[in-house]
Image 1 (cartoon, rainbow, N blue to C red):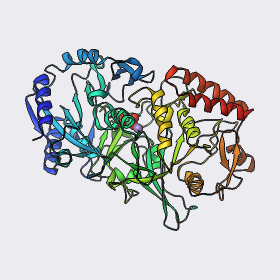
Image 2: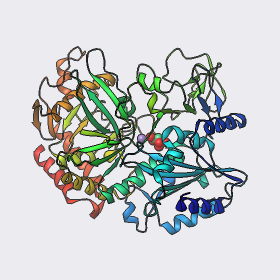
Image 3: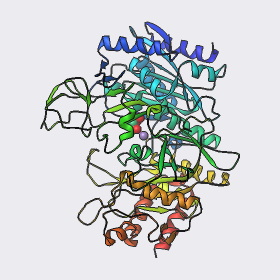
Image 4: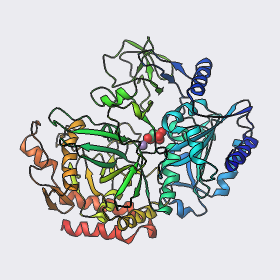
Length: 579
Ligand code: SAT
Ligand code: MN
């Protein structure tokens, strides 16, 4: 028995006072028993056998998404958390949480869940242990991570593990907090059973805590998908990509080449998080720390993402979806006709034509990554995969062209730092407002983002063969407000130019914002786009870009003296190039 682990578990038990403690081994038998208990108590219900071994969970309707305003970074100095985080001192964080934890597991079972983030035996992998009173969390962690004995074996007698204490508490939003103590590698979460708040390996560990570790130790913990793109000659180039939400990240991770792209294949390594280290060869090597997908169900169908549909066909957990009368999971955008009647995500009867959504817009599927038809043969390689390109993107009606390449690493860091997306109807508030979300990490960087930019700049100097950095925008609109780029599988046409550039291709022209594809360099054959539209996809409007640079200045100002001077220099250089 690991002494450090044992004493922490004892401490948590003394505080939370559970009726009993169960150490989870991750076995099939244990999983089946937990699922049986949850189906008996109504926490889960079994779905139709068309989805073997799959279950529905309905959460408390007040607990359906991450709650950023209740999520804190607890560091001694507020400046170390930065303007990008809600902050508490470690003392205040503790003082607020201890009374909530006191006796919170009375009458409940406390599960001890050891888990591994990353492939077994990988030098990049890290161990976490989550203590939780939610069996729903346990069975989700078993899909999302390598859970149980495998993690204890990797840990051995080391005390180097990230601790996460989670309790559902009373599920009251007034007593819901997610607190991170980076100096202690500790996460405290209470009052929510929702994914990012409760599956502590994901955003809390693999991004917020790991980003702090990565800065100290000289690597990257990023909110990025990882894919391999195989050309018709059988050579695979790996890229990592970061997008704010609602930009099609999961679809890109599981892209299916359209008929026009004969001989090309796309391999999924990860859909959400990348841990990347500099290898002895001076390249950047990436692993996916997760073992499953926690994907948004609405909008997922055989047209938009057939690989996701195939991934969730068995051994999956569906949270806050609707169900058909014969027990099939259902959501807006799934294949087939809309049924006449459904049971909605709250368990209420629903009829076709209702103004209410049947599935919650943030309904989720938890599915094993190994079930994805496009899963890469290298996805569990302990060394990871070598990254040739880093792609940033956002949803922009104008300004950003379909694709451009940063001039060099430092300029690429500026491009990543100025990533922005326009709000969609999926968010509350006004539609079409530009929101900055550097590297898509705004809610996930566990420390001051000024320091994070400095870390990115420093890392450039540590790589002999740094990835090339690109920016894409699949969402450009014409004057009539219509999307002009077909997107989805056709995005492979853009990725082909990206990897051609990584492999030394020179089909590029200079512009003020960076390298654009030379005319004809992005294969447009067979697309229904007139010449004016094709040209507009790559148009760089100096006026729009100057306004953009002013908007970036406002955003950068938030970081005060923590903003590296190089970032402002990059911005001024851009303005100078714009003339
Ligand atoms: O934060 S979650 O992991 O629950 C979902 C997401 O935002 O990607
Ligand atoms: Mn994410």
